[in-house]
Amino acid sequence: MSLSGNFSKNLSSMRKGCNSTLTEFAEEISVSRSYLQSALKGSCNPTLDTVEHIAEKLQVAPDLLLSFPRGPGEEMPSLVLIQNLREVRDHLRAALRILEELVPGELDAPEDREEP
Image 1: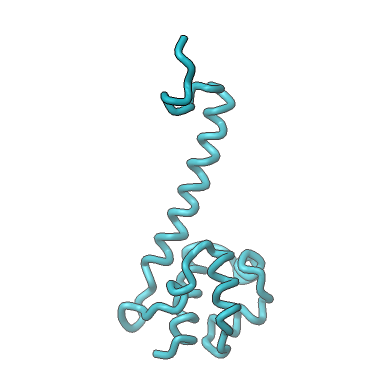
Image 2: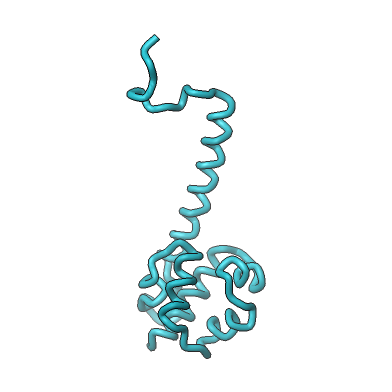
């Protein structure tokens, strides 16, 4: 399979992992909806700058978008896993902010606290 074919399959896997519409996903990665459709069909040859831009927006390494899938018809589980981990990280950050508001100063590391 070609690198553009890998890109297409891996981008499709990322989109499925995000559970977003075509339009929402295009907005998230800052490309037009028509470009995204073309990329998902494998009918475009993205430039390295485009791959790098999309990888940056998805917060993944560019090589993950170009990696060879494991087998015919298989998704790249690592891409879906990365997206899920990003969501978990965001939820944990939000929970930490709430805890910090409820218990100010108590969540500092022990070495950062002053002795009573």
